[in-house]
Length: 352
Image (cartoon, rainbow, N blue to C red):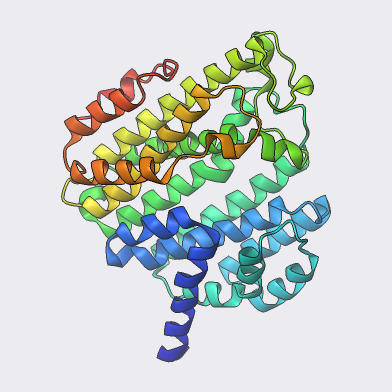
């Protein structure tokens, strides 16, 4: 590949990131320059996998086949061009225009992928392989009745987000010997970090998911509180449902506390990586607070966080990015109205 082609592919990657995720388009530039391209590329690979899973126009067999094919494309065992030509005409209007464009330009994204070092490629390949297989498995059991239990929700969160946390940790450790010294602990916390962010998305998107025939809430938590998810309707003021929701808000808070522990283990001088993590944690806490204040919300727009609160989170966390004790106090203060987190004492001891 010529130098001109590489620049063109990189320009496309930067452009499409703005279209498919305003959040990541905001956070990725905070990273050290050596990590920006690979993490931007990793996000697009995950977004392609997610696009396959999300479009209801695809049959279960097509989803499985295309997910497997894409994993092979990332590993270099199948043609990116053939994949794009196969998937593109199958996507419906349900898939946003930016994602249609991303699928058509899969070859450009993959050319960048195949230019990374071996450790980076292995991290990306593992993530996409596990995510593609796991998401296809869960799509086969998708229903409005919810997942069987919290354990099933944990597994789902691992496939769509925990594995991303592991991949990012591999990339951070490849980048920095100092970060690599904490790899064992970071890898454990990475899964929890991912779950905290994904649970926030699940709770925020309850009604959007339900409209397309899916529910990722755990039946056992709600049945324990006397509510059957089959009876769930937008905007219902049911104390039993809200009690189950409160319990999940607490679980998500506990995982985000582990995300803060993870961030605290990143060297203080790596402010870019810390900002990348802290902004995600901050926006998740803001969202959980919104949900907690409006437990009878009936659409995602009602719990959308304001630009002003996002800006305040960015400014505050950036200002204190290197100070673990201040970050711990900020977390405690901003999450004070959320239901109590699950027990995470072991993780708390990691903050210094």
